[in-house]
Image (tube, rainbow, N blue to C red; front, side, top):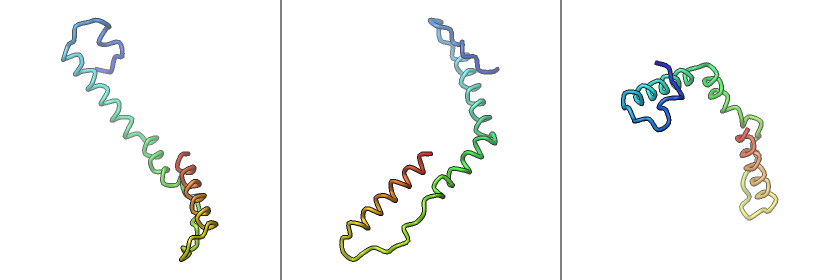
Length: 85
């Protein structure tokens, strides 16, 4: 039985069989969509969201270096923004 958004009707007595049928239908719809190629390609592409973010390419200074610390913070911001796309 396909999912019917009109069931159960407002103010109707609860029927366990009707609710079970609705939940089973929703689960089948979710599983069908989850195995679709759209979802698979979206998941496969998420790793590449951060590909444009380059590495820092430098070692840490032995002492506090304000310029270097700012570069690290800027790189973290760049990575966060790339992952939000």
